[in-house]
Amino acid sequence: MLPHRPAPPGRPARRIALGALSLAAVCSLLVTPATAAPAGPLPPEAHCAGRDRLHVPGAARQQADCLAELTTAGTVGSGHTDPADYAGLTPKDLPTPTGVPGIQIDGYFPDTSTTNTNHGWQHDSQFVLRLPDHWNGGLVVAGTPGNREQYANDRAIADWVLARGYAYAATDKGNTGTAFFRDGDRPGDAIAEWNTRLTQLTRAAHAVVTQRYHRPPDRTLATGMSNGGYLVRWQLEHHPELYDGGVDWEGSLWRADGPNPLTSLPAALRHYPVYAAGGPRAADAAAALHRAGFPAGSEFLWPYHHQVYWDLTQRIYREELDPGYDGDTEAGTPYCASGTPACDADYTYADRPAAVHRAVGRIALTGRIGKPLITLQGTLDVLLPISEDSDVYARMVHRAGRGSLLRYYRIEDGTHTDSLADVFPGRLRPMVPCHRSAFTALERWISGAGRPPADRTVPRPAAADQATWLTSCPLR
Image: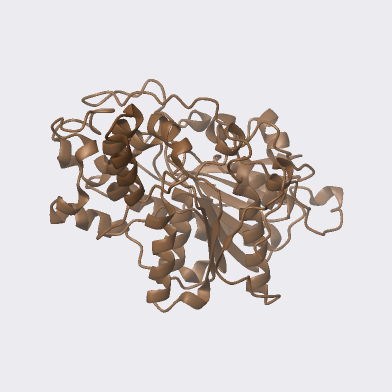
């Protein structure tokens, strides 16, 4: 799920205000410079050749620009990314690869919602496509974490894959911001649209890549973190024909019978204040949090998650899937005390009406993947606890008879938000190098060059320094 962007300024409030997030001092995903795809220099006339002939199928609007640099080393200055969209997801010292000229296409598909303010378009279902001059034959498609917009993965994922020679496409998922639940006519519509929009973009990006390079991509890979990881799982379950494989980085798990975020987060809201207050009931509250999936040893992360993530995430996703719980109030009451009427701290998903479970069922995962998938999640994830998420999803895949298509790596001392590795140096292992190791393992797997290591918990290096953790994550 990852950090949610606040609703754009000037949007009318409906019923009650949601309140702003205080995302204090979030640093984040450190990554290593990527190696550019092996390709000879193009003749000058080939740079951005055919830009005016490129057409994004189904787009209501598109704008193609010839850029000297497609990574954030150039797009920040040229206005072809939005640093606010990836704020808090990468560290200030993140190395940015350079030397990736090519074409960027921004645009949007037809839609009725207007939460995405990028380019002044006031239009959702925005996308970005980047087509490097030096192409390695592949396409990477991504959905965004949290409720962010199409540039959210630019530093964590896009820069690296572009420098490796991949074409890259990303979508805002069709609705953005902390009031994303206002989109759609019935519970679950907004999240269901996320899946539709990534499918739509993948098909369109495949066509544009074929136009640009005069042949289709020889491999199409889906990847994303948090909500973006959920999209990878869903796509490989429902549209495996569009992809050669995917990397799921701590994807959200939705199941009609649970577990899902609405079964773990209320326990955090209910028991954490008692734990934080200390006194004779604190030990029992900690034990209740552990039973809910928040692992022993993660206690140092609880205050931050209580302040930033748990409350808001519970309220806005509960509003999307169960708006009747709090009557006419929109997305509940922030930080309400347990015992307050319609308080999200007392929400019990199992007791909610069948219609609520049907709404979750509309977006639920099954484990029936149809192409190779690598899943990774940190053992100290306290937004989506690993025992309630990827551990469960891995079992689902095996029960569905698709275990040969899955590799699952539990990253010891990784957490949901890599920025916290900077806030708590030495206590958390950054996940981004593990994502890169998983991605390259997937490349070898689908090319027939070697199967990835068996499922395992990737141990924290006994004597590694912080610099090593930021650049290395061997899966063996």
